[in-house]
Amino acid sequence: MKIKALLIDDERKALAILRHKIERKCPNVTIIGETQSPNEGVALIQELKPALVFLDIAMPEMSGFDLLEKIGKPDFEIIFVTAFDTYAIDAIRHCAIGYLVKPVDTNELINVVDKAIQNIEHKTALIKNKLLIENLQVQTIQKKRIAISSTEGLEFVKVNTIIYCEGVKGYTKVHLESRKPILSTQSIGYFNKLLDNQDFYLIHKSYFINLNHLEKYLNEGNVVLTNNFKVPVSRNRRNDFLKNLKNRLT
Image (cartoon, rainbow, N blue to C red; front, top):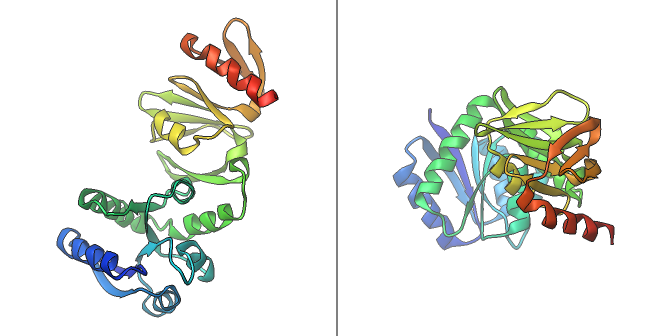
């Protein structure tokens, strides 16, 4: 499957390096255009209709996020290319969108392109891009939605409806407020990184809870969550967990 790609990066050298690596290591990708200007990038997207866009985030005319908002229906797969930026990377990962950190590692490039090709086949780009735009408008993680890779595909849920995540043999069962759980193909460690925030806490190697759904802490070493879920707190995490709760209340 040949994929038509467009490259947008305001740095000439970064653009040249990326093009060279794609041409050498990604035979399924055909570069149909490139530009250092985000405004020209908008025009090229509308004219050339690429299936895949490599998009820098920090650019002087407009950011990659601003460029995405300017496109009416961004139905192309994106691979963001960025210097390390925790906020930007978190926003991208919440939506299951690919990214590369500069300087671009060749193996990471190959892996993220392979994933992008799979996503193009599944036609999930438009909903993921809209989700990113939506999430950029809100400040707190509880008000965001995230993309969860499940055994059936991608599922999109509001963070504030997640009660807890349960690790199950390398998978994760995501327990939700008002619908059946989602069995995610990602590990509990993945969700710990994805939702690394003061509102979430890993109380056990297999249980990661949303503290906004915490109703009780029992002296026996369990917590009671929304919908009367009872989850154990591991012995070696109890003191730290109780300190965390105290800090939240002060």
